Image (cartoon, rainbow, N blue to C red; front, side):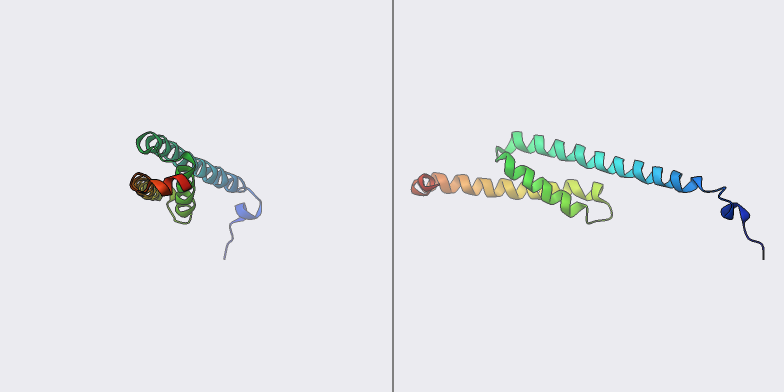
Length: 109
């Protein structure tokens, strides 16, 4: 049985670095896609909702953390982020309603 001597002699050693570069390039693309989606969702939500900026950033952090636990974080993140932002919007609307209908609670806050 013949063995491939090219592998023993290190002739194909460059393939590992090519693979590594391809992986790094792919990861950088995914990171850029998530960062772009994150900023777009944040800006749109900040303008539209008027919710506290800190809450929006926390919601986006949670969505990103959950997205990274999947095989396709760049595809899952926008949906998770939108769901989290909608939850913040609903919470913020309830808070505004409570403040308007119960002024004595608003003073305590």
